[in-house]
Image (cartoon, rainbow, N blue to C red; front, side, top):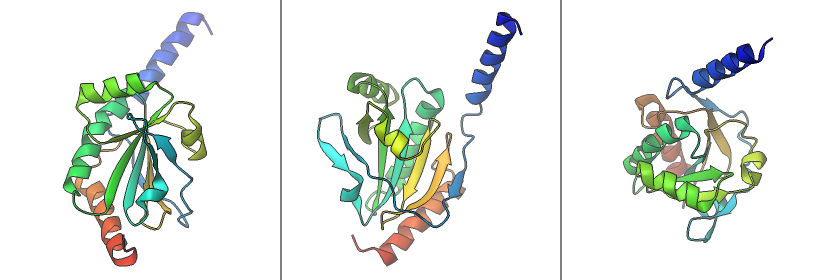
Length: 177
């Protein structure tokens, strides 16, 4: 195959991967295994750990500033968090492989105000078995993985919102914060 044909194929693949904006699907994780450890610094340098959020449902979202689907997904993550404000729910946006400055600039550009953690060496991303960006995981109030979305998802779409709200309701009944 010629270099031109190879490049054309790569460009077509990249275009296909970036469309549509919301192509992911929320899928249940069989047997709800324990979530891997997650401890990372936020932009202020404060260490935050998933274990601190036991009793709440946590959405862990892996993203990068160079990933257009990741950035398109962020506003829906924030709307989801706003719709569940006051309930035991939290979003942790984990930036993968970038400097704090680059992550902060991307969040400022799109107006994201949620919790941002840094994974500069991709150790957390790898430990969670994530292979694409964005990748998201819903962790139940008991610290177990409930579902995942590989690829972008519109988090405040009715069917997705219903699934997350159901998990939060179950948490209120089963896990006392």
